[in-house]
Length: 275
Image (cartoon, rainbow, N blue to C red; front, side, top):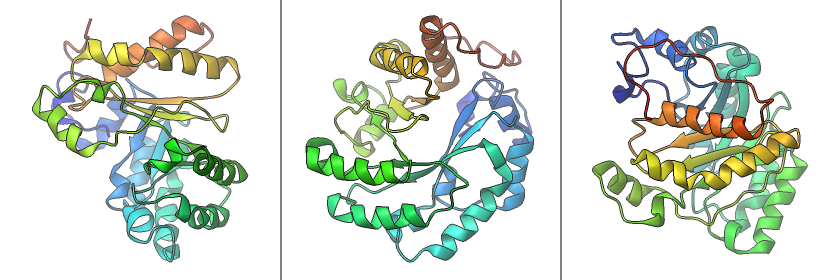
Protein backbone atom coordinates (compact mmCIF):
# COMPACT_ATOMS: atom_id res chain seq x y z
CA UNK A 1 0.00 0.00 0.00
CA UNK A 2 1.63 3.22 -1.12
CA UNK A 3 -1.09 5.20 -2.92
CA UNK A 4 -3.42 6.15 -0.06
CA UNK A 5 -5.49 9.14 -1.18
CA UNK A 6 -5.07 11.08 2.08
CA UNK A 7 -1.26 10.91 1.75
CA UNK A 8 -1.21 12.94 -1.45
CA UNK A 9 0.03 16.44 -0.74
CA UNK A 10 1.13 15.41 2.78
CA UNK A 11 3.53 12.48 2.46
CA UNK A 12 3.60 12.26 -1.33
CA UNK A 13 3.83 15.12 -3.77
CA UNK A 14 0.59 15.96 -5.56
CA UNK A 15 0.05 15.61 -8.41
CA UNK A 16 2.36 12.61 -8.82
CA UNK A 17 2.27 10.01 -11.57
CA UNK A 18 1.15 6.57 -10.29
CA UNK A 19 4.45 5.03 -11.42
CA UNK A 20 6.33 7.46 -9.14
CA UNK A 21 4.30 7.01 -5.95
CA UNK A 22 6.16 3.97 -4.69
CA UNK A 23 9.47 5.80 -5.13
CA UNK A 24 8.08 8.65 -3.02
CA UNK A 25 6.74 6.25 -0.38
CA UNK A 26 10.16 4.57 -0.19
CA UNK A 27 11.50 7.92 1.02
CA UNK A 28 9.35 7.51 4.13
CA UNK A 29 9.47 3.78 4.86
CA UNK A 30 11.69 0.90 3.80
CA UNK A 31 9.05 -1.85 3.73
CA UNK A 32 5.53 -2.31 2.40
CA UNK A 33 2.76 -4.89 2.63
CA UNK A 34 1.87 -6.19 -0.83
CA UNK A 35 -1.82 -6.54 -0.06
CA UNK A 36 -3.14 -5.96 -3.60
CA UNK A 37 -1.65 -9.28 -4.74
CA UNK A 38 -4.27 -11.00 -2.57
CA UNK A 39 -6.95 -9.87 -5.01
CA UNK A 40 -5.10 -10.26 -8.31
CA UNK A 41 -1.67 -11.32 -9.50
CA UNK A 42 0.04 -8.26 -11.03
CA UNK A 43 1.62 -8.23 -14.46
CA UNK A 44 5.32 -8.99 -14.45
CA UNK A 45 6.01 -5.58 -16.05
CA UNK A 46 4.18 -3.89 -13.19
CA UNK A 47 6.34 -5.71 -10.64
CA UNK A 48 9.45 -4.74 -12.61
CA UNK A 49 8.33 -1.11 -12.24
CA UNK A 50 8.05 -1.59 -8.49
CA UNK A 51 11.59 -2.93 -8.41
CA UNK A 52 12.89 0.00 -10.45
CA UNK A 53 11.41 2.48 -7.95
CA UNK A 54 13.09 0.93 -4.90
CA UNK A 55 16.56 -0.01 -3.74
CA UNK A 56 17.63 -3.60 -3.26
CA UNK A 57 17.32 -3.23 0.53
CA UNK A 58 13.63 -2.25 0.32
CA UNK A 59 11.33 -4.95 1.73
CA UNK A 60 8.18 -6.24 0.02
CA UNK A 61 6.07 -8.66 2.07
CA UNK A 62 3.85 -10.04 -0.69
CA UNK A 63 0.53 -11.70 0.06
CA UNK A 64 -0.32 -14.85 -1.88
CA UNK A 65 -3.52 -14.64 -3.95
CA UNK A 66 -6.75 -15.53 -2.17
CA UNK A 67 -7.45 -18.11 -4.87
CA UNK A 68 -4.58 -20.13 -3.41
CA UNK A 69 -5.10 -19.47 0.30
CA UNK A 70 -8.86 -19.01 0.68
CA UNK A 71 -10.57 -20.58 -2.31
CA UNK A 72 -8.31 -23.59 -2.84
CA UNK A 73 -7.07 -23.67 0.77
CA UNK A 74 -3.51 -24.47 -0.39
CA UNK A 75 -4.49 -27.50 -2.50
CA UNK A 76 -4.76 -27.87 -6.26
CA UNK A 77 -3.47 -24.39 -7.07
CA UNK A 78 -0.08 -25.22 -8.59
CA UNK A 79 -0.66 -23.23 -11.78
CA UNK A 80 -1.86 -20.14 -9.92
CA UNK A 81 1.19 -20.37 -7.68
CA UNK A 82 3.51 -20.73 -10.67
CA UNK A 83 1.99 -17.63 -12.31
CA UNK A 84 2.32 -15.65 -9.08
CA UNK A 85 5.94 -16.63 -8.51
CA UNK A 86 6.81 -15.75 -12.10
CA UNK A 87 5.13 -12.35 -11.74
CA UNK A 88 7.04 -11.32 -8.60
CA UNK A 89 10.43 -12.61 -9.78
CA UNK A 90 11.62 -9.11 -10.84
CA UNK A 91 11.61 -8.04 -7.18
CA UNK A 92 14.72 -10.12 -6.60
CA UNK A 93 16.11 -9.55 -3.07
CA UNK A 94 13.33 -7.05 -2.33
CA UNK A 95 10.92 -9.98 -1.82
CA UNK A 96 11.54 -10.11 1.92
CA UNK A 97 8.81 -12.70 2.53
CA UNK A 98 5.86 -14.31 0.81
CA UNK A 99 2.89 -13.85 3.10
CA UNK A 100 0.45 -16.74 3.43
CA UNK A 101 -2.62 -15.26 5.12
CA UNK A 102 -5.10 -18.02 5.93
CA UNK A 103 -8.84 -17.68 6.58
CA UNK A 104 -10.29 -17.85 10.07
CA UNK A 105 -11.80 -21.23 9.25
CA UNK A 106 -8.34 -22.72 8.60
CA UNK A 107 -7.80 -24.57 11.86
CA UNK A 108 -5.64 -27.26 13.46
CA UNK A 109 -7.17 -30.01 11.29
CA UNK A 110 -5.86 -28.14 8.23
CA UNK A 111 -2.24 -27.93 9.39
CA UNK A 112 -1.22 -31.00 7.33
CA UNK A 113 -2.34 -29.13 4.20
CA UNK A 114 -0.10 -26.21 5.19
CA UNK A 115 2.76 -28.63 5.81
CA UNK A 116 2.40 -30.14 2.35
CA UNK A 117 2.14 -26.72 0.75
CA UNK A 118 5.24 -25.32 2.48
CA UNK A 119 7.28 -28.38 1.52
CA UNK A 120 6.50 -27.80 -2.17
CA UNK A 121 7.46 -24.13 -2.21
CA UNK A 122 10.75 -23.06 -3.85
CA UNK A 123 13.60 -22.28 -1.47
CA UNK A 124 14.28 -18.99 -3.26
CA UNK A 125 11.93 -17.06 -0.95
CA UNK A 126 11.38 -16.77 2.80
CA UNK A 127 7.81 -17.49 3.91
CA UNK A 128 5.57 -16.14 6.65
CA UNK A 129 2.14 -17.39 7.71
CA UNK A 130 -0.73 -15.49 9.32
CA UNK A 131 -3.47 -17.59 10.97
CA UNK A 132 -6.72 -16.40 12.52
CA UNK A 133 -8.33 -19.53 13.96
CA UNK A 134 -8.73 -19.06 17.75
CA UNK A 135 -7.41 -22.54 18.55
CA UNK A 136 -3.89 -21.56 17.48
CA UNK A 137 -3.90 -18.91 20.21
CA UNK A 138 -5.98 -20.60 22.93
CA UNK A 139 -4.82 -24.22 22.72
CA UNK A 140 -1.11 -24.92 23.39
CA UNK A 141 -1.27 -28.24 21.54
CA UNK A 142 -2.62 -26.56 18.37
CA UNK A 143 -0.06 -23.77 18.65
CA UNK A 144 2.73 -26.32 19.03
CA UNK A 145 1.50 -28.26 16.00
CA UNK A 146 1.59 -25.12 13.86
CA UNK A 147 4.96 -24.00 15.20
CA UNK A 148 6.45 -27.39 14.37
CA UNK A 149 5.32 -27.17 10.75
CA UNK A 150 6.56 -23.60 10.43
CA UNK A 151 9.92 -24.42 12.01
CA UNK A 152 10.45 -27.33 9.60
CA UNK A 153 10.00 -24.91 6.70
CA UNK A 154 11.94 -22.04 8.37
CA UNK A 155 8.73 -19.99 8.03
CA UNK A 156 7.65 -17.19 10.36
CA UNK A 157 4.32 -16.78 12.19
CA UNK A 158 2.98 -13.24 11.63
CA UNK A 159 1.03 -11.86 14.60
CA UNK A 160 -1.68 -9.28 13.92
CA UNK A 161 -1.94 -7.24 17.12
CA UNK A 162 -5.40 -5.65 17.43
CA UNK A 163 -5.44 -5.38 21.23
CA UNK A 164 -5.07 -1.59 21.31
CA UNK A 165 -7.75 -1.20 18.67
CA UNK A 166 -10.33 -3.30 20.53
CA UNK A 167 -9.53 -1.79 23.94
CA UNK A 168 -12.49 0.60 23.69
CA UNK A 169 -15.47 1.13 21.34
CA UNK A 170 -14.96 2.80 17.94
CA UNK A 171 -15.34 6.56 17.59
CA UNK A 172 -15.17 7.12 13.80
CA UNK A 173 -16.58 5.61 10.62
CA UNK A 174 -13.20 4.06 9.79
CA UNK A 175 -12.95 2.54 13.27
CA UNK A 176 -16.51 1.20 13.09
CA UNK A 177 -15.74 -0.43 9.74
CA UNK A 178 -12.55 -2.02 11.09
CA UNK A 179 -14.39 -3.10 14.25
CA UNK A 180 -16.64 -5.31 12.13
CA UNK A 181 -13.84 -6.75 9.95
CA UNK A 182 -10.62 -7.15 11.92
CA UNK A 183 -9.82 -10.27 13.96
CA UNK A 184 -9.88 -10.13 17.73
CA UNK A 185 -7.23 -12.61 18.87
CA UNK A 186 -4.86 -12.98 21.84
CA UNK A 187 -1.50 -11.26 21.60
CA UNK A 188 1.42 -13.32 20.33
CA UNK A 189 5.00 -12.03 20.57
CA UNK A 190 7.23 -15.05 19.92
CA UNK A 191 9.53 -15.02 16.88
CA UNK A 192 10.32 -18.31 15.14
CA UNK A 193 12.99 -17.08 12.72
CA UNK A 194 15.62 -14.36 12.43
CA UNK A 195 13.19 -12.24 10.35
CA UNK A 196 10.02 -11.71 12.46
CA UNK A 197 7.16 -9.71 10.93
CA UNK A 198 4.52 -7.91 13.01
CA UNK A 199 1.28 -6.25 11.95
CA UNK A 200 -0.07 -3.73 14.47
CA UNK A 201 -3.42 -1.94 14.35
CA UNK A 202 -3.84 1.16 16.48
CA UNK A 203 -6.56 3.82 16.59
CA UNK A 204 -7.23 6.89 14.49
CA UNK A 205 -6.00 8.93 17.47
CA UNK A 206 -2.17 8.94 17.10
CA UNK A 207 -1.58 9.20 20.85
CA UNK A 208 -3.62 6.05 21.50
CA UNK A 209 -1.79 4.26 18.71
CA UNK A 210 1.56 5.18 20.25
CA UNK A 211 0.47 4.13 23.73
CA UNK A 212 -0.67 0.76 22.38
CA UNK A 213 2.64 -0.11 20.76
CA UNK A 214 4.87 0.38 23.85
CA UNK A 215 5.36 -3.36 24.38
CA UNK A 216 6.43 -3.75 20.74
CA UNK A 217 9.19 -1.17 21.17
CA UNK A 218 10.70 -3.37 23.88
CA UNK A 219 10.18 -6.60 21.91
CA UNK A 220 11.56 -5.29 18.61
CA UNK A 221 14.57 -3.75 20.37
CA UNK A 222 15.20 -7.12 22.01
CA UNK A 223 15.00 -8.92 18.66
CA UNK A 224 17.53 -6.52 17.19
CA UNK A 225 19.92 -7.11 20.08
CA UNK A 226 19.57 -10.85 19.42
CA UNK A 227 20.69 -10.32 15.83
CA UNK A 228 17.25 -10.70 14.25
CA UNK A 229 15.98 -8.44 11.45
CA UNK A 230 12.34 -7.59 12.28
CA UNK A 231 9.81 -5.83 10.06
CA UNK A 232 7.04 -3.84 11.75
CA UNK A 233 3.93 -2.58 9.96
CA UNK A 234 1.96 0.19 11.66
CA UNK A 235 -1.72 0.56 10.75
CA UNK A 236 -4.65 2.64 11.91
CA UNK A 237 -8.24 2.24 10.73
CA UNK A 238 -7.98 5.19 8.34
CA UNK A 239 -4.18 4.91 7.81
CA UNK A 240 -4.11 8.68 7.35
CA UNK A 241 -0.95 9.17 9.44
CA UNK A 242 0.61 5.71 8.97
CA UNK A 243 3.91 6.80 7.36
CA UNK A 244 4.64 9.34 10.10
CA UNK A 245 3.62 6.86 12.80
CA UNK A 246 5.89 4.19 11.30
CA UNK A 247 8.81 6.60 11.45
CA UNK A 248 7.93 7.50 15.04
CA UNK A 249 7.99 3.80 15.98
CA UNK A 250 11.35 3.36 14.25
CA UNK A 251 12.82 6.28 16.16
CA UNK A 252 11.56 4.93 19.49
CA UNK A 253 13.26 1.60 18.77
CA UNK A 254 16.39 3.38 17.56
CA UNK A 255 16.59 5.20 20.89
CA UNK A 256 16.90 1.76 22.53
CA UNK A 257 19.24 0.33 19.89
CA UNK A 258 21.57 3.16 18.78
CA UNK A 259 23.21 0.97 16.14
CA UNK A 260 19.96 0.76 14.19
CA UNK A 261 20.21 2.82 11.02
CA UNK A 262 17.94 5.74 10.26
CA UNK A 263 15.11 5.54 7.78
CA UNK A 264 15.47 7.45 4.48
CA UNK A 265 14.96 11.18 4.60
CA UNK A 266 11.78 12.01 2.64
CA UNK A 267 11.45 14.96 0.35
CA UNK A 268 9.33 17.65 2.03
CA UNK A 269 5.91 17.98 0.40
CA UNK A 270 3.74 19.57 3.07
CA UNK A 271 2.84 19.59 6.78
CA UNK A 272 3.23 15.86 7.39
CA UNK A 273 4.52 15.85 10.96
CA UNK A 274 2.25 14.75 13.79
CA UNK A 275 4.06 16.19 16.81
